[in-house]
Image 1 (cartoon, rainbow, N blue to C red):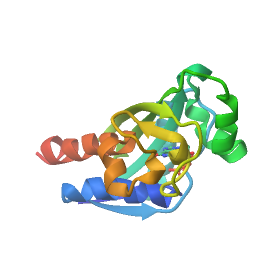
Image 2 (cartoon, protein in one colour; image 1 turned 180 degrees about the vertical axis):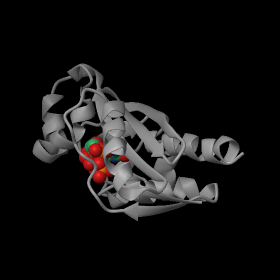
Image 3 (cartoon, protein in one colour; image 1 turned 90 degrees about the horizontal axis):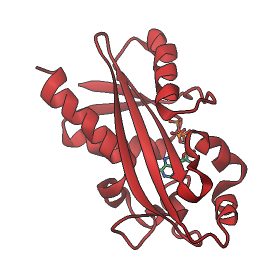
Length: 186
Ligand code: ITT
């Protein structure tokens, strides 16, 4: 089975492909930008994008929206993570958390799948802490400042396989893969 992953982010594609290939599902990257509407939830963004893009493609499609939710900032940036990354970046987030002791944060991922008979959403979450400085140069986005629970290193210090043992994205794609293999195909 072949699914088209619409994303402009090669790192996301690689992480997701490694999960899907364990289940014998091939992901193809369709390089296009998901519409970054200013919605209040990841689910809204994913559903809106699926509705807009599926009629143009007409093949099984997957889209993902993810965000970093920081407790001390009232769960900001959440669905605004792209914008915050492009404007103030990791350095700006560290600055906002200067002298803040509560470092608790989580990444959330919402994966949306659509084909001719189903529209389904799958969610994944990883808890962790915001580091005190940027560490590592792998991955993308806020990886250098996020330490998942159970690890002593940031995502940016891990290779893809290790990040996938913890990540929000890996959990959401794992749910999609299991649903395809055990339910959708029956
Ligand atoms: P799309 O083309 O798929 O939309 P994107 O890079 O814009 O790719 P998102 O909108 O899903 O991705 O993610 C919003 C931001 O959240 C993204 O720019 C990153 O800064 C951050 N982010 C999401 N997942 C991340 C991860 O696994 N590691 C680090 N940062 C992440």
